[in-house]
Image 1 (spheres, rainbow, N blue to C red):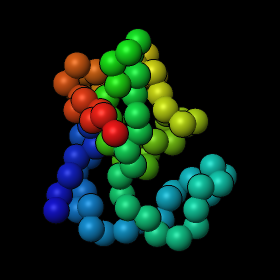
Image 2 (image 1 turned 30 degrees about the vertical axis):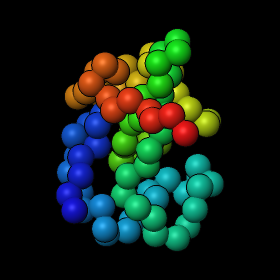
Image 3 (image 1 turned 30 degrees about the horizontal axis):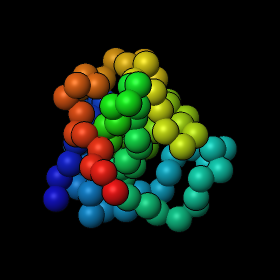
Length: 88
């Protein structure tokens, strides 16, 4: 299935694994999914962002990002347009 990065808009087949292109980040050497999901917070409002490896590298997240960090990518989708995080 084809998906888009919510930041830059790149479209990829999410069934095709990719090698993360930034080995110095120390993530993994094996092929992984082309998109990563990150939690994004504004005050008490949590959203989920789906980003490609390039945008993930630009964010350099720890465990989650703030809405200001998301905005720093100049994303195609605003914080308000991101899918809300579901309660677990």
